[in-house]
Length: 193
Image (cartoon, rainbow, N blue to C red; front, side, top):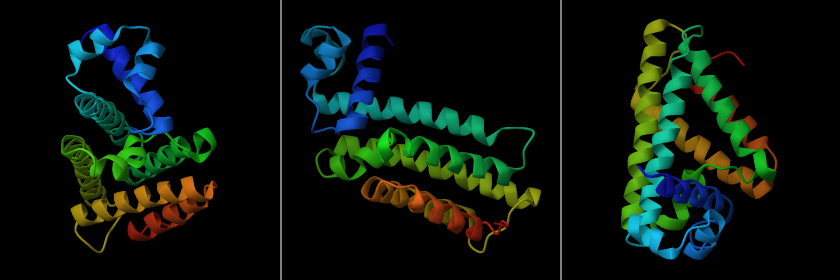
């Protein structure tokens, strides 16, 4: 990937995380990066194609970070999962509770606007849920947690819980929804509070 393309994607992600996809024009991104419009269209056929590439890049980085968190050798799987949700909370309460998760920021906005972006969000979130399910399964085998449902359903429910909590944090501008989500997560995984 070229440096210019990477800069356009990184800058666009940062701006869009704050303003949303519809609230940001290509010119704003290009002015911030300092490249001409022709450079944008050299790498992306449209704003929608840019959005899809941005989401793919975002989820690639997100999944790499999640893999790193879930592979910490000095911790139990339960501790690694709790670290993941603590990191989620820390990232989402930054910037006056406006966070920086693109799945939270763009999920409802672009799902009805762009099928390709919706599918990028679907692929990315499915990757997160899959990794969480594998971790839950490993935690059961390890004995650090137990659940009453199957690992995939549990992972899906917990991910959806945290997405919802993230939206509520944006609405109420406090971290209280995350405190409730963490309590529920501990209950679902049968961890002591």
